[in-house]
Every structure is written in C-alpha cells, then in structure tokens.
Length: 409
Length: 82
Image (cartoon, rainbow over all chains, first blue to last red; front, top):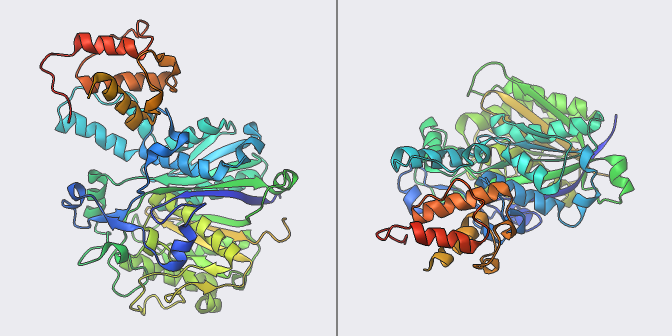
C-alpha cells in the first residue's frame, strides 16, 4: 500500500490563521470567540460566535470570482495559504483531487435569497444563487482556482464532514486512484436563520457567559457549543512523489476510520465512537499506547463530552487515563463541517511542536469527564502519533491518525 | 457619489476587484472576471441603480457603455443608496 504524507497546510480561523499565529494562540489560551454584531446578536440567546474578522478584500485569490459564497471564499483563502510558495505548480493536475467537507455549504446565500423574496418582496434573487450555495462549491472553486482536474468530491456528514474528506483523500492516494489531494473543510453559517436554527436545537452555550470563555469542554459547568466559521486545507501526497520533488513532509497520515452509530440522529453512542477509534488504530497498525495526544471532538455539550469520555475509555482501555487529550474548540469554537480538518491540522502542529494545546476554561472537573484533558496550560509531549476525533449528528464518526515523518523523510 | 464611483464600489465590495483599475474606458472583458462574473456584475449594477439592462449584452463593451445606459435608464426620482 502506498504511503500518504501531508506536505502543506492552510487555515483561516477565528483563532488565527496558519501559517500565522493559530498554534501560539491555542497554546496561550487566546480565544477567537467574540460577540456578534448588535443587529444579529440582540436577537439571539447566545449572541457570540467564532468569527473570521479579517477583510476578504485583500486576498488576490478571491479577485473577480463570481458566485462566491463566504464558505467557498474561506476555502479559497485556506487553499491559497497551503499552496502558496510553489506547491501548486509541482502537483500533477490530472492526478490531484480536491476533497472538501462542509455541513451546510452556502446556507447564507440561500438565506439572502429568501430574504430578497419573502422579506423585501423582490421578484428575483442573485443570478448565481444555485452555484454559490451548492455544497460542492468550495471544492469546485478551489479546483478551478488551481487548475486541478483529478476530481472534486464533497462530503457532507455534519460535523465529521472534513475529517471524512481528509480520510477519503488519504484512501484515494493510498489505493492509487490519485497521487495528491487538496483536502479540507469550509463552513460559514453565521446568518440569523442558521444561528436561530441551532439555538432552537438547544445545544448552544447559554446563560451568563463571557464570549471568550463560553465554550467549556469537559468542565462541569459546560452548557453547550459555540458556532464558528473558517476553513482548513491539508495537501496530501503520495510519499515517493513528495520525496521526489523535495517537499517538506509535515506528517504521515497512518490511520483513518469512519463508522456510524446506527442508533439515533442526535444522541451519540460511546460504542460507535470507540469503534471508529479502534478501527483507526488498526488501520495505522498501532497499539493504543502508541498514541501520545488526542484532539477530542469535545464540543462542550453536556451529553457529548461525557459520551466521548466513555468512548475513549472503551477504545484505549487501561491506557486512557494516561493519554493527554484536549478540545481546542474551547478557543476556536465549533467550525462544523470544517472542524475535523482544522483539528487534525492542529494535532499535526502539536506533533511537530511536541506540545499539546490545553483545554481552555476547564475550571470545574466533571466526574463524567475524568480523563487527562490538559486543563492547566500547554503540555510537553514525547510521541510519534496523534489522533483527532470528529463525531457528528446522524451518528457519523470519523477518526484520523497522523505520525511523525521519521522514516518518511 | 458619482455613478462611476458607485460601480467601482460594487466591483470592489462584491467581486473583490481593484477599484483603482476601473475607468470609463475599461473594457468589460478586461475587468478581471469571467463570463459568469460579468453577468453577476451587470446584475449588481441593475440592483444598485434600480434599472434593467437589455438582455443582449453585445452593445456593452466598456464601463462607459454601462454608465451611459445607467444614465439613460435611471429614473429621475431614484434615490441614491446611503
């Protein structure tokens, strides 16, 4: 089987970009969650979110692009950050795919169209609402911008979407269908209708909260998740080709699994999640004790964090209490369909720095979340293997493992 | 704000084009957009000025051509956006 490595990464997130201050912010506990604009926030019970605050106007990659929803614009910015510096020119366009995950794609474009039709009583919507809003728009725009012709694929499995996009890209290279995949996720859902829909579901952080510390994964006083926007891209390549072109190898992807609980649309199953972790370990041919850091799904919901704790215990057994685990969602919030790719990128940064970011705001230990969730600042690691969990509504579970590139350089 | 300035702002805000590069004699096919981008641009112009441009775009070669049509079609009472 062919080996697959990560040769570049690009992130646009509320907590900073990569290349950029993202990882330093995570180590330093600097939150990207802020109050929403008054016009939006005053009508919401949870008036904050993780917002990308930089101007889109400064990005040459976006210049003149038609039919561009914000989620696809963020995808282009992340892809540009990853491919800048000549990587794009070294990929064989016919053997390079673009695999993206997104939860709701261009939902904001759809909402703008409804706003025009029903609220403003206009008789038309923007001419390219369909092609801006389609879930496949991010992958299509990235493929178009960089002339990549190996096929564009979009995964929409809620919060596991971009973990699966990365995982399926990994499999496509491993099994010889492609030599490279620009893989990632993009999401931008900070519109009134979508925020209200999440509010109605009753899973958002609520109560008397400060924005920066509203998301409190694994803490006994957690009340829910905080929505965020952003995009993350990883360039995956077959090892020999990456070596041949002298690429810097950031990590090797060694394991991936996706499972479905087959039980309930919203109530997660510890056994289904554990099965995904076990299968990813088998895929990587690793024993549980080989994994030295886990970036948890850890959304900050009462049920989700407790279930994930049980699942980690099931998958890691006696080793579970010794495994350093953190949820960086405490700082960057929940990027939904982009979360998995972002958090896998963060796990790779942790592997390379041999330093795990903490779980911020874990002030009150919860007996139902009694693992080593790194509550007290960044932690030095000594490991060659890191894991990232993504668990989604619909009972979808996806787990990725990255390994130190020793032996692949 | 003049009609040209309003068009420049649209191009900059909505299509992320460099407004400094847009002049009266700029050819539409030199705006830096593809065929879809041009349709989107003309749609935005229609919305901005509350007018409808002809379906057949062949007569529109430059930004100046668009401005001339805007001038011809804009109702005297149409309020300028804030």
